[in-house]
Length: 453
Image (cartoon, rainbow, N blue to C red; front, side, top):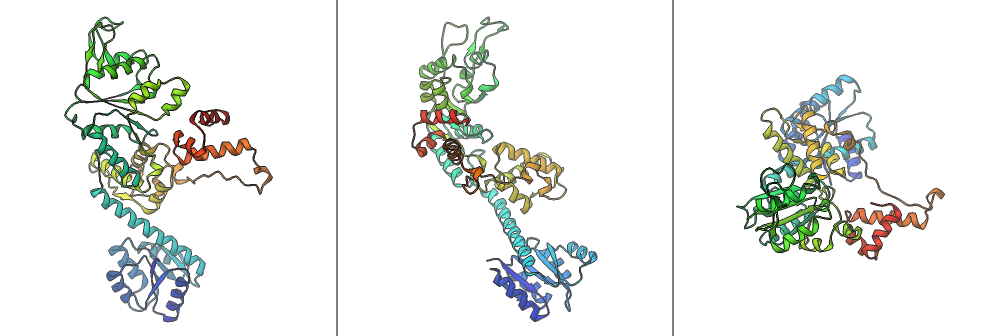
């Protein structure tokens, strides 16, 4: 129950306000002077203070000013009998969260206090997250305290000690390369090289040479011999990002290299041995690609010895705020004294938590960088956030039979239900097929039939 301190030197009014708050589900305490209230605020915890302005001795504005200076995390609502601009300005300058005019509307007061109490809760949560950032369990560059991240950390610790091939899956921007680097840095190969390549960024005509190397004269412009990434990563880890984009004609050569632990440079008659651990990553469904015939099933088995599935940011709860604080601290260091931003205001934190982050951690980092560039104070506020985050409202498909226009065909009902199951399972088609009670091939046919991705 939010704990509210009501301050008024008129005892009947004080008791009446406390009774209204108690009926609204609050723990209402009373103080019959500003001096008594000030002592209690210093010695006890309150979520909101509601104070009258006109009182003998210390008035409500002075009390508000003291609380704002000593306990800025405690919102103060000022009650005044004078509904004029001067009084409102004075209250806001004293640090008041809001002000109410007499006669008090009980409903409006309860709404204002509920909003203030919620902001107080979010403010405490944000501070707790910032304290936790200093003590957070980090594995390599990964940051997070959510259950899914703790489980991921445990899997990384366990897999790092072996040389098994690892396939990292997850949406774009979830940090797949960070996971690969974390595995490398905590493996026996940590003193060896970590070589990374994005398979989608290399032209198909050059990918074989990039991976396996080439000899002089192997093709036009091959004026000198060059070691491929397999040889460059010898003794360490080779990370192939977007492995689902590998050309189909190259995949048998990659499979043979992994089986034989040797590569044949383009244009060479001899093979070169290598000793690497291979980690691959993709944001695509490789099982579906095998059904399509664009990815070899035997290669998938070779790469997918251990699979690590990265959760999307929307499934990580308060990790959003933890990561936001991490990016603020990181960018503040790189900018030196150019930024005075220390954290995120409670209202903005609520918006960050509510947003679904289709771009995941990468989008959050860009958002924080933008907000820090626009921020005028020491905290990021709602106005500093992109419009799409400020105006975001969660969307949910609701099929209702109350409206004739919403009476659905079986095909449309199936389409919506399959889409909803995939959404809940973060696009994991293997699990979705199990939930729907069909095999994967049947699910793929349904996806094509209903035009689902």
